[in-house]
Amino acid sequence: EAQVTQNPRYLITVTGKKLTVTCSQNMNHEYMSWYRQDPGLGLRQIYYSMNVEVTDKGDVPEGYKVSRKEKRNFPLILESPSPNQTSLYFCASSNRVYGETQYFGPGTRLLVL
Amino acid sequence: GIQVEQSPPDLILQEGANSTLRCNFSDSVNNLQWFHQNPWGQLINLFYIPSGTKQNGRLSATTVATERYSLLYISSSQTTDSGVYFCAMGYSNYQLIWGAGTKLIIKP
Image 1 (cartoon, helix red, strand yellow):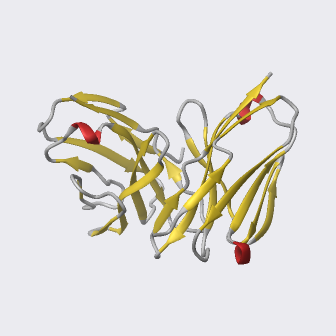
Image 2 (cartoon, rainbow over the protein chains, first blue to last red):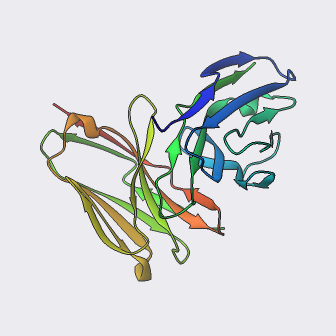
Image 3 (tube, each protein chain N blue to C red):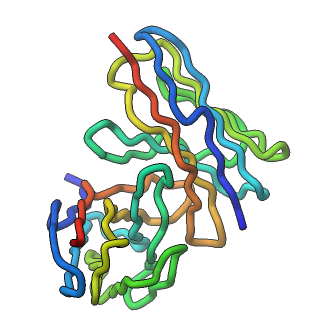
C-alpha cells in the first residue's frame, strides 16, 4: 500500500528540548516536503527536498532543520523548540511537485510548552 | 509576494445542494491544485488544473489563468464532502503557496 508515515502522531514537549519528527514514504518518490498548518493560515511550506542530499528552504524555515540521506526518509528536526512552533505538521511526497498526486502523511500535532 | 485567496471562508449547506468555491491568485499561474482535508485531518489531492476544466465524479474544477482564478464545483453534496478545501499555486519549481481554505459543512 502506497503511504507516507509520520511519527510521532502527537507530541508534547518543553521549550528547548530537541525533537525529531520522522517521515517515510514507500513509493520511491523524489520530491518530499514538510508543511505546518495553523488555524486560518492554510499550509505553509517549511522545507522541501528534490532528491537525496538536495534540500531547500520553503516559506517558514526558521527554527527547523531537515536532512535527506535516503530517498525514503525526510526527518524534520527542531533543535530548540519554542511555543510558536506549536502546530500541526504534514509531510508530503510525490514524483513531481506539479501534475502528479501528492501523498500526505497523517500529520503530527506538536505542542511546545 | 504571491497571494492566494479563497472564498467563502465558511460554507454550510444541506445534503444534495450544489456549491462553488473560488480561488483567486495574484500572479500568473503555472500550476494550480485543489486539495481536500477531511474532518479527521487527512489531506488528498483533488485536481491539478493550471488551465481549463476537469471533472471527477461530482467534482469539477475550472481555472481561467488569464483572469487569475479557479473554481471548484461540488454537485449533489454529500456529508462525506465536509471538510476544508484548499487551493495551492505553484511558485518557483518546487514550492506551493496555499490559500487559507474554505471550510465546508454538509448537513444531513
